Amino acid sequence: KITKKSDDSHSYVGKTLGKIRPLYKKIKQNEDRLQQKTRLLEVQLQIHGFNSALVKDDRFFVYNRQCQMKRRGLPGRKFKHIQIYLFNDLFLWVSARGRFKGSYSFYKENLEIYIPSNSKKGDAL
Image (tube, rainbow, N blue to C red; front, side):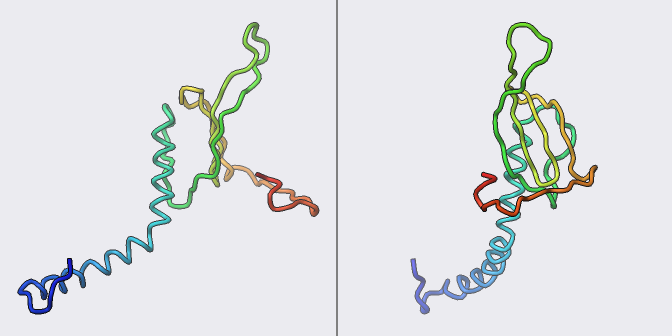
């Protein structure tokens, strides 16, 4: 609804909009960062038994996939279903039910990444 200038509440609407616009701009500026943190929180809620915080300012979620891990030396079922999560600084895996099983931090090691000269943009997908 558009408030007419002759209406008594028009000045209040103008003051309210003047206060809301800067708040809206700040929300839009931080929207991407907040979405990244929301995604990290969603992942953390799926994992049981991981005692470290996944939500950090410099961490972002990259990939999630269910896969099979080969069991060694056990009769019967030879494959075990696990869920893997990849972040920019962390790789972790959980059981099919979401119980934390292990992790590997990329900051602990000096990793070198080899990208072949003949590789294309879509090769890693």
